[in-house]
Amino acid sequence: MLSIAVCDDEKCISEKIEKMAKDFFRKKNIDISVVQYSSGEELLESSKGMDIVFLDIGMQGMDGIETARRLRSHGYKGFLVFITVLKEMVFRSFEVQPFDYLVKPVQEEYFDKTMERLFLSMQDKEKGHLFVKKGHESNIISFQDIICCEIIDRKVYLYLNSGEIIDYYDRIENLEKKLDRRFFRCHRSYLINLNHLKSYRNNTAYMADGKEIPVSRLRSREFSNVILKYMREWGV
Image 1 (cartoon, rainbow, N blue to C red):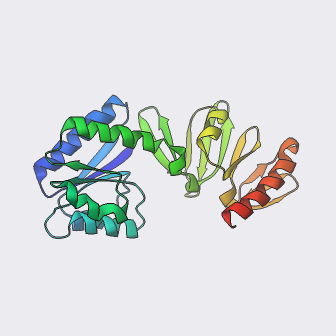
Image 2 (cartoon, one colour):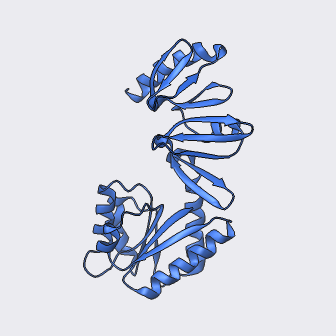
Image 3 (tube, helix red, strand yellow):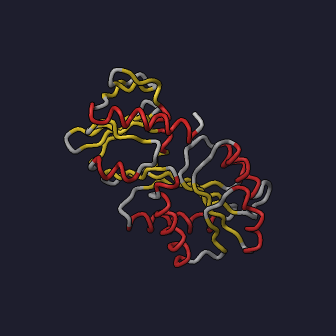
């Protein structure tokens, strides 16, 4: 499920954004949860993980730019969409890497255009995130959080560094295309994240979480070369 925050000190604006977000993702057959906040201070106090934040720039008290700055400094890496009265206000926001902005009064046509681009970005492998859809449930997973991927009977299992395991139906060939160069297919049933590789010996990859992954004999020489190349390119 996608988690969305709407932060605006005008209740009617927050409700309109929530409604449009729900309508948009309903068409995508994706469940979302939306939480409204009336101030930047209230948003920052929340410990709830957020995939998308709609943030009014011109709020009373802490404005949207400062709120976004603090969100980013606290490690927030999700999508920021600013809501503003004046387009010129957005020039102050570049440092906090907003995805886009919406001008009040927010029109559904422009909202949907922004959301279509944002939705595509969620699935863009160059952004370093994997978009996983399982039934009505959707997850956005950072590549860095994936230790390894295993396929069993047409089902993919993602092992995350949090200890969570996410499973869904897909082909490992499709998954491999969505991931970047830090992932290596060491076996017909496994993709490993080289960021989480602790050691390699006797055709076995030892991962940082203690998991032991077999490396096929056909891929062992290539794997050794990939490790060396990876260490040079990524500065490991």
